[in-house]
Image (cartoon, rainbow, N blue to C red; front, side):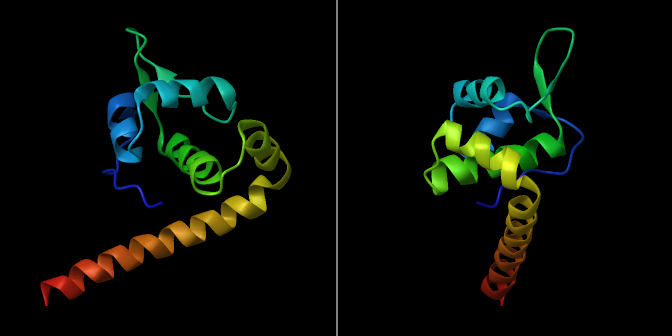
Length: 109
């Protein structure tokens, strides 16, 4: 899944949930379940997700929603095989982004 978010330092939970097509409650739930998600909170307590958090959310989304992992299975996979799988996932994600841009260019011709 390729997420289209403008490049920023921080993203609010609403824009993150919208980009993933899920409820904010699911993002909060995943934050509690997966220790790799550590959004910063401002004085009001609003979550601010970094680009690194977004990468981790994409990986979690991929494992749980696209590959059908249970939460426990995804946690184990993240711990045991994160580096190799994340590298492959990032490569695939970049290629999907390039494909999307090429399709846009093709449609403009």
